[in-house]
Length: 133
Image (cartoon, rainbow, N blue to C red; front, top):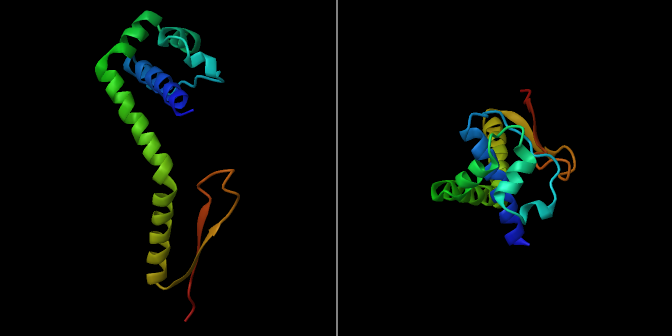
């Protein structure tokens, strides 16, 4: 469900933004969450997944409710969706551009998938060696 996915991202990204805002510049993982965690208030979510890092979950809720923070997280979510849709195309373009550059420099070049994409979407490798004349 798209609405649930957006709610999940909103809570996750807002929590990381809040933690960063209060001085935790290192990424703090939330661990294994459940879909039901995103059905309650943000205050409950923050208390469950960041209570060791925050002084007050009610302050986290106030941060969450601030329109500027809502707008920032919305932009992050849109960027993440855009990356999800176009990321592979852009990465493939960059790899092919590099391969063409090497070819123009006189190399024998091939682009190969080096492992299953399910393991990682970044599975393209440029195999290149100088041409012998």
